[in-house]
Length: 320
Image 1 (cartoon, helix red, strand yellow):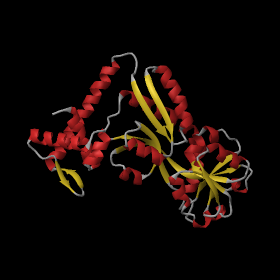
Image 2 (image 1 turned 135 degrees about the vertical axis):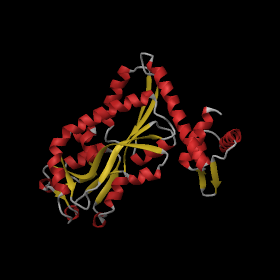
Image 3 (image 1 turned 30 degrees about the vertical axis):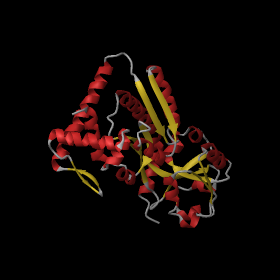
Image 4 (image 1 turned 90 degrees about the horizontal axis):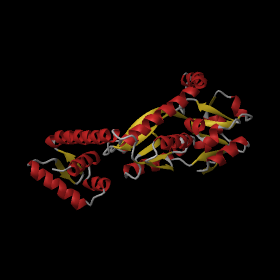
């Protein structure tokens, strides 16, 4: 019995597929299948039921897989404790984020590298959907994403950790007629020129407004373009409230105000981080995530006082 075999059976159990598990573990399908066969022969027990619809653990297999998970977790703890006896952290960390928290991450990365110069760190920016696929493929260690329960169910091999709840908002120039409103209804958006960030969640949200399909000017991945158009009153923007509070290009604007939607369009999205369930977080990753949580939650508290009355108003507003 080897550590690799334990990793393989945990991967198979979580993915429900030999092929998917082989891809996750970066081995060929025949190699993984042979390793599983050898382990079952050594234990004299069948760990999985194999069928055309997938691979599921047997009753005995499930119990042993839980023990395998515990062994792998203890192994990571052993590695982390061994590293803790050195004066500095060592290792590599690959993180991806949607645009909203990028400025926070850049600042945090700078501080983190100063404290731990032996860390090799990489930071990427993309949409939440793309990031989840990259984490699932183990191309990225940690992803900062916006997600819903749909993604939690879709990516069963990923671990989601929520930091905050967020909502979709309308961003307008403070001189715009809509700026005086307490909340936004569908009728208020008719004939308003709208620019959108290119994101699947935002596009899905907009599909609820069937009457607005011809009022969307364009979508873009350029946050600066969105900011300029809103500041110049060329268009309004609909996006995540968290992005407007943290993105460097959006949060520093003194000409933009945010308006929440009235029910039924006041919807909640989770903001947090995600990592692969087959991989126990390294000491480097755990240390970074602790610092990240502290920084994000501290920044969020600074907005809580100004937002609380608006949130209460929206939640108590009757459905239009």
